[in-house]
Image (cartoon, rainbow, N blue to C red; front, side, top):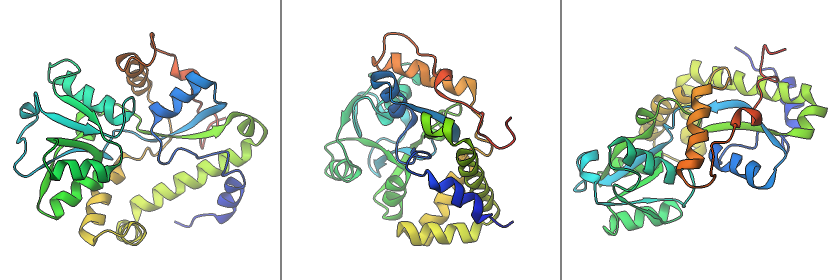
Length: 261
């Protein structure tokens, strides 16, 4: 398969206006919309189950999820995705939302330092932080959140609403290029792994594990799962961010997806 560079050229004209998800989870982005009326709209489901997030522990730490009860687990910040995932994990064990102490500690480096010095019992972080502990033989992944929460959209692609209305061809071209890239990645395993290794400066073993465990989470069509949007909606109430479940279906559209009219 060859990727048409013209599609990317058109799509990238508005790169500052479209495709600005990348490092930001869906909850945080939609909260901006609810709180400030940010004029953006979700144009494609980028990735589904949260395989990019894990709960990691030291080798001599908790051996099972049950052993987390009453322990201390770090997250990046209060109100973010990792905080909600921690509460969801606790709820799924029947402990309510505070079966263990959830401690916001900021960056992964700070959380890792706290874990190594045993100030905390576990940390909810991006997957590579857990993989590195295993590679160093100092820790292990206890919970893979993608296995825990199958119905979800962890990442979504966005466009500035006004830009999308005025430049629908550019938005469609951007998405066409995105999905061609996902298709290429999934059909070219070895080359994709080499790109991951070089771009992220990780070992070949870690890059291979990244590919094998994470490539499947990318949505191949961009279509939104209504049940996944319901999970997102209830999360705002469970976190105490909003008093009632918002209708997030009004904040996404499938009209720019390949094959849509």
